[in-house]
Amino acid sequence: MSSTSLGNRQCNSRWDGLPREIRLLILKCLTEDGCTLARLATVCREWQTDIEKHNFARIRLTPSRLFDFNEMTERNRALVRYIWFCLELAAYDCVTPLTPIIISFQTLFSALSTWDPHGDLVLDISVHSPDDSEHWFKYLTFMPDTPSDMLDECAVEKATSNRQYHDPLHGWVSGLRHSDPPIWALLRMFENALETWGDEWWDRLPSVTAVTSLLLRQQNRRRWRPTLLARMFARLPRLQEVHYEPWRKWCGQSSADKGEYCCVALVHFQGIARSGSRRQSLSNRDPWLEYESFFKSIRHSNKSLKRLVIFENFNQQYPATMIPSLPCKRIRDPSPAVARAVARASLELGHVAASYIADASHFFDMDPAWEWPNLTSLVLTSKLLTPDSDPVEIGVMLRSAAAAAMKMPRLETMEIWNGRKGLAALFRYQALRDKREAVVVWRGTWMLAMEPSTIQAWEAVMQQYDGWRLGLVEELLDKSAVKSHGDAIRSLELSGQVIRPISLQRILFEQKALEGVEALE
Image (cartoon, rainbow, N blue to C red; front, side):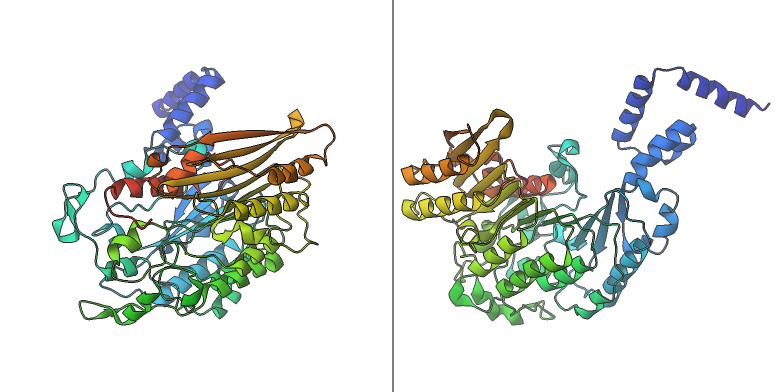
């Protein structure tokens, strides 16, 4: 017997002699250490099994690895639970050709179409340019999604710890931003990089039944047209969960009189050139019509969908400091048609969160025949939840919410909230079925005096359940601690998920990086 095989037997014997709890603890420490684990898989069969489970559970996939992707994962395909598909655009002084991007999506969907539909599989799609964080926006990160129970509270900050925040040429001096980026830099980062893609080729993609969850997180600052997304979703018939975090669009809208987004006057800058050569093209499509069509298509194409989370992100510093000479609407008015489309799309779902993209007051202006037999959690925002709003209008909305709750027999939580710099407000209804009671919570930077008729409307919801009682809880928050909508989310302690945990961490870190910069309030 060779000395090598004898050594392996002795090693395995010592390993097998350890209690299973100790062996699992050692393997857990190794997988959480952040080191390369591939070589450790050869130590013994048990190590190979556990380390392969860890290595293949979460995969980062780039276009260069697409062609051998199926071959790479063939033996361990059942272990894959999360695929982070990273599309890298060209540097700012180059033009990204569309053909390679289209080929990447075609190859990805072709590969995944051969996977068997068993278990859960998350597809996380990210698009970025290396130049995004190279010059003016050094605080930006490009990271995979991380579940809340695995998320390091300082993950985003650690990802930028080795960057030099002293770059006077691009407005950074000793870690602080001293000058604003030029308009072209802002528009370049938020350009419609996917805008010129035709829609028809999406319809030719093969159907992918293996994917059950789709993530389009707020680190995607490039815009996805809603109608394009509808076609993508149609190729994913087994989708059960969607997290979509678009950025608020503040330019190029076609209907200025609706105040749909801000800075409509930026259409004037369609001829902006960088160094006299690069032109920024802006879309004249009406986003509300596209969103309305998008939500309608979800109802027809994704019958398996159970959870829909949409968070329209924004940064109050961008319009205030980067384009101060242009007329910007401070707070836009969401479209009633979009809210109605969201409401219709939610009729068969179990969890719905629509933040900033639709207003709760419009959502609850519903068809009397509508019912939500499966809905257990609903989270919406409303611009009415401010101390300056008419309390009568707030009361009307909350009573309409109670009327809707009567049509939601499985409802456990309904939250209506609002948040921005200096403002946080939450109305929550929570059914505690094990205690045979429900609680109405008001938490905010000001106190709302709820009318007796509003309390009575929610008591009527309780009358559906014999012997239940309704409690009322009020809590006042410190508005000086709310420096952004990210702080508002954290202060309000929302029970329903409205945004991916890593995305919230990015918002908070970005706000910290821009402390002292003027915001549009």
